[in-house]
Each structure stands twice: as C-alpha cells, then as structure tokens.
Image (cartoon, rainbow, N blue to C red; front, side, top):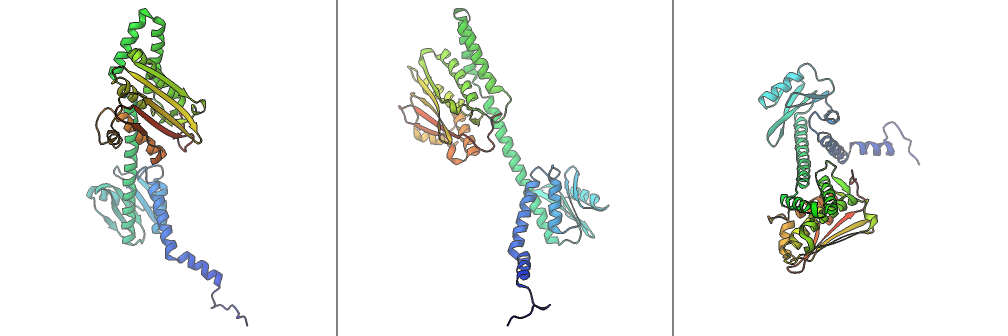
Length: 361
C-alpha cells in the first residue's frame, strides 16, 4: 500500500535540498569563500579599486544594513546607506584608536601588526562577535596586501640594481681599449663602439621584466666582443645558439651574469687565460642554456654557500638569477653549477619555452 503525501508528510526530494542549504559544512565553506574574496578585494587597500566589492561582501556576510571602510585619511567606501552619524563615529575611532558605537551602529579599529590602519563601520543589528571577526579578517587582508606589495617592490628594486650593475672597472678598460684603436685600427674602434652601445642599451634601457633570448644573446655577444678586445688572446670565445630558442621569453638579464662570472672568475684569474663557451638549445618544451669556462673552478661547498646566500662576495649576480628563476618558474628551475677546483665551471640554466605570464616586452 502506498501512503498518500499529506500536508504533514515531508517530501524526500525537498527535505534533501533544504538539508543541503542548512548543512553547517556548507555554511562554513560559504564563509571561507567569502573571506577569500574579501582578502583579494582588499589587496590594494581600504580605498583601492576593489574595496567596494569587499564592502558589499562584508555587508552580505554580516547581513548588515550598511558597511563602511575608512582609511587613515578619512576616505570612505560604503555599501548601503550609512546614516548621518557614521562619518563622525569613524572619525572618533581614528582619533582615539578604540571601538566606538551608538544604537545600531558600531565602528571598530582595523589594525595591521598592532598599528591602526583604518576603521570598519557596521550599521544594523549585527552580533558583536561577528563584527569583531570581520574586523580581524579585514586587518589580516590589509597585512597580506602590504606584504605582497613589499615583495613586488623588493623584486623591482632588485631588477633595477641588476640593470645598474655595470662594473666601472670594465667600462674604464673598455673605453681605454677603444681609444687605443682609434688611430691604429679605426674600423675596429667603430665596431667596438657599436658593441659598447648595444651593451649599455640593453643594461640601462627601461623595459619590462622579460625579454627574448635573442635580446639576451645580443647583449652577451656585445659583452664578449668588448672583453676580447680588453683581454686579447687570453680570452677565447665560442657561442652556439639554436635558432628555435631565440624568440623564447626569459627574465631580463638572466644570462649576462653567468657569462660575466665565467670571464671574471674563470678566464681573468687564469695566468694563461682561457675559453668561454655559451650554448643554447631546445629540449622538448624547455630551453637549455649552458655557460662553461676552463678556468680554475671552485669548491662545490663554496658554490652551495653562494646559492644559499650565505657567502658574501662577487657572485651576487648568480644568486639573483637563481632566485629569480625559482620565483618565476618554480623550485625545479634554479641554476645548476658543475665545478671543482682545477676543473673549470659549467652553469646550466633551463627555462620553459612557454610559461604563463612570461611575455617579452
């Protein structure tokens, strides 16, 4: 016998859907997702371009009549109608750095590492615990945004330092060498001036974070031409580049420090000079760049210290390149240095032929 579905008998399908909507796990997931969106929208600060979206998300999450975000300068972003007392209440909190409230309206200080960073204003019958939690979320989002901004600024400063890292000793020797050829070999002097101009242009030009490997290799060839002019027969060079790697995008000034290291620490330190070999080839979805010298080599333990950043000295360029590669492509793409005392040095660098966000400019 099949029972009739009366008014008091729950329908299985409807009961299941209601249970899903009210299940605590689903509520927690919704809150966590909202918190993630709020943090993302506040990454540019309390009055950034996405702060309005964060205020709307907070208002929806708290079921408030209005939510306001106020920075230290008093600039405000609102979702909903705040009422006439909201601005004065926010100003009170900014002055006193403590919670302030009136009937149906509360303003909480927002702190980043114990320092006042702004004010959260909530209008409506919202539980105090919920408003405190919201203020904590906003403070954490602001702190994360500041940390991310600091990291970006540090990376840009490091890149500017790399661009300006031209040895005065090398420039002086190069110009002196060019001057010596002006009368005896004016054609060679002219060629060296063009190489010097290419070298300076690549290092000091205002460009993006990425360039093509073709641009990197042009700068390397210019540097090596100048180094050969200075060192004469003490420096022997061989460059072999496969055409298919030339258009690949790579971090700006990723190759030049490797070549400079080979010349300065490999060839110049050897009494009879030496050779530097540079090669680039495509291996499936990656490019392999190799810079090798037959100089005195290094203690492998010292190399590990250099790449770990625990050894001071003139190998800062290698450390910077290694860190940038790992940051951009992941931990598997750092430099590989093969060396031993008396056995020369080979530095290998791999970069993907295509990688999201890495575009030559």
